[in-house]
Image (cartoon, rainbow, N blue to C red):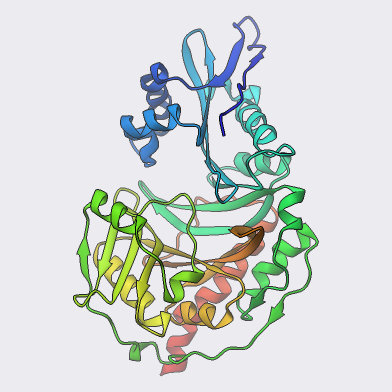
Length: 397
C-alpha cells in the first residue's frame, strides 16, 4: 500500500521561522544522523540510524513512515514507524527532538500524524506499539496522551553506557479488539500481567491452569544441547525465509526482528534463529525448528550460549493459549514481564501473547523513572525474579 502524503507546518518559537513536519528524504540522511549524534552521542544502537544503506532503504520503502521536522534546513526531529502489512501491525521508534525545540511537542505531532493515518478506518494497521525509554517521564506521558495502553516492561533490556529498562505500550483500534481470540489460558505467574492489561481494555477474566514442568524445582538437571554458532547474516536470513517453524517455535512470535545469529546442533535437529546486537548486549529469539519435546531444554541451552557470548539479555514471546509451554519457559528462568493483547495475527483473528525475558546481569533500576501502572508491572516482575533467582536457592538447600 502506497503511503499518503503527510505534511504539516508549525509555528516556530518566538521570532523563529516555521517548522515543517514531513516525510524524510534520502538527502536528509546525514542531517538525521547528526541529530541523533547531538542527542545520544555515540551510544545510539539502532542500525536503521547508524547504517546508511538501511536508512536509505527505510526512507524509500513504503513499509516505513520516517518523519522529520525541519527548520531552516536543519533536521530538528525524527521518528520512524515500521509497518508489517501482512500482520497489520506497526512499531513506532526512534523518536528524537533537538533539545532547544522540545517545548513545541514535535514528537507528539509526528507520532499523531502517522497514527491517525495508518489506523484510520480501512487503514493498513490494527495495532501500533512502541518501546519507550524510562530515563524520564516524557515518553510515557506522550504515549498515554495519544491513547496508548500500558502493557509491561523490559527490565535492563539494553546496556550501552549503563543498563536501560524500557516500557511497552500499544495503541489498539476497535477492529483489533473485535478480532481478538478470547479466553487466554495462563499459568498463575503470568496472570497478574494479564490483569494489569485487562483493567485498561475491559477484557474478560483469563483461564488459569496449574501446570507442573518436568524440571520444576530441579533446574540443575536440565540437559544442555551442544550448539554451534553461525554469524553469517545473509546466509541466516535466506535460510530462515525458507524455514517452517515447528515444535514450540510454532507458538512463538517476534515482530520486526530479522535474525542475524543461528545456534544449531551438530546433527541439525535443532536450529534457533536470533536477532542480537553486540553493542547493547540485546538478543531475541525469532524462530526455529527442533525435535526436542520440552522447550525448557532448548531455552536453557540458548541462554547458556548467549551468556557465553557476553550478552546481557534475551527475550521470547509466546502465545497466551499454551500454558504448558509457558511453564517450560519459566523452568528455563525466562520470566514474564509484559502482556500484549491482539499482538499476533492468525487468519482473520488476533491472538494475545506473553513476553518473557531472561537477564544475565544484576538488575539495576537506579536510572528508571516509572509512572502509574508501569510500577505495578515492575513489582510483579521483581516478585518472580526473587522467587526464581533468590528464594529458590534457599529451598534447594
